[in-house]
Image (cartoon, rainbow, N blue to C red):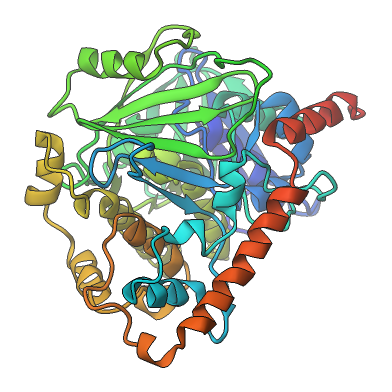
Length: 519
């Protein structure tokens, strides 16, 4: 017995087409048990292009789907991402004043028996280290400073000596996925859902404005914040994070490069503002910029003016677009015969680029828990518990960036540092990390998106370190720690020397895409 023979996806964009192409590859390989996949999207609704940065997980997802990596550069404006640079989050200063820190993708290595995190803190608490950890303990910030690619010119597709993500145009990515899906057999229907028919199994069919009726065994809701199937039709309750994650709007505006053909940054810049933060991302032919803010403290006009000031000297490409964000999650992402993905399921503000990742993770996890017979409950309940736990963990990770800030200069920052209530889990972790450095057993989850080192990058960058240093330090001779960090410095220098500039690598891949044969 197979759980279903037909599947309808409501909604396009990145979520819908990522689901369609991934599931077509995963479920459509056996001609003896064909699965019909139909995607319905409205021509009246444009994709929300806020999430133009990704986590490294997208590489394996696209490899599985069969998208050539060069096509990301040739058709989706891609550049590569070494990590995020945070400016002004600690004290409200600028980069020149040293108020910055990095969250790279690479993991600190062990040397001389201890992690470089421990070696760095050993020297720091002895008064022998002044530099931030990411300037001495890991590699990718050196590539960020030099605007270098994390990939070498000869690196195979989707592989590199070091981990990396992408900056890309999310709308163009959706178009790339759409073409691949249609080419591989996904049925594409353009129309607007006007009615949802229910039955005991959940959803029986959807009717479009033109009268067409589309029935299926299973439905996937990719309708965005409106959550037409899971939220409206099946009435699964929504749990808001709005009282703790205060940013609920964004204004976005692409701009031209100041110097077309000049150097491209291989990292995202996140700059703290009076009522939120701005992002600045280098794509090949333009910059993606925006301001994520709390409407409680900032009007749309004020936000647009702030973004315009940040973009002074850059020519805007189109008008600024205000996006309203519903931050939180539905209490169940899988209800009866309906699975919600992306914004239809939940949303964590875009600070750590988790939007596309949550779609990927949900799809992969759903396939793991897909029951043999329709209507089975145990797998569905376990899936829902895991997804809810993941959203809550990501909520805490993003919240960390705000609540340990030393800023008290605006009502927004005072609300975060003096009023927002932390979850019991985050309170316990911060209490623990006042006494020790983060380690894997503190997280204690096999499916955690961000490991102990990711939490450490934020804590160390915000100078929120163990109050009395590391208990291991008395047992580590300082010369051992110096030797460990000297080894890292050699690796950093070699990486910069060997890596092409981000512009050079992007040009190479764009040319490769242009010259590739088309089927």
